[in-house]
Image 1 (cartoon, rainbow, N blue to C red):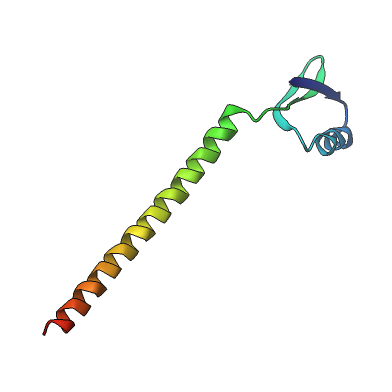
Image 2: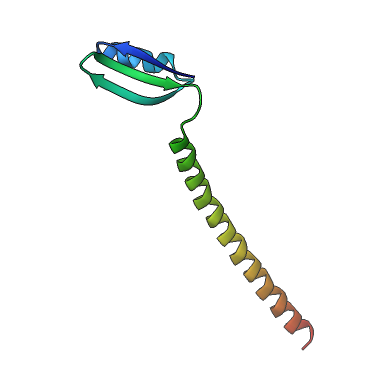
Length: 86
C-alpha cells in the first residue's frame, strides 16, 4: 500500500519520517500544492536490486576466498604426498 502525507515544516517532515520508520520512503514531492512524503509498505524494486547487487559482490568475494583456500589445501596435500613418497 502506498500513502502520501503532507507536511509544512522540516520538523513535521522529520516527525513523519520517524513515525513511519517501518515503511519505505519512496518519494518526496515539493509541488505547488504543498510538500508531501510518499511511503510504501513494500520494498521498492530499486532497493531490492541494490541489495542483490551488494549480496552478489559479497558472494563473489566469498567464492574467490574458498577457491584460493581449496588451491592452497591442494598444494599442501601434494607437498605432503611428495614428502611421504620420497
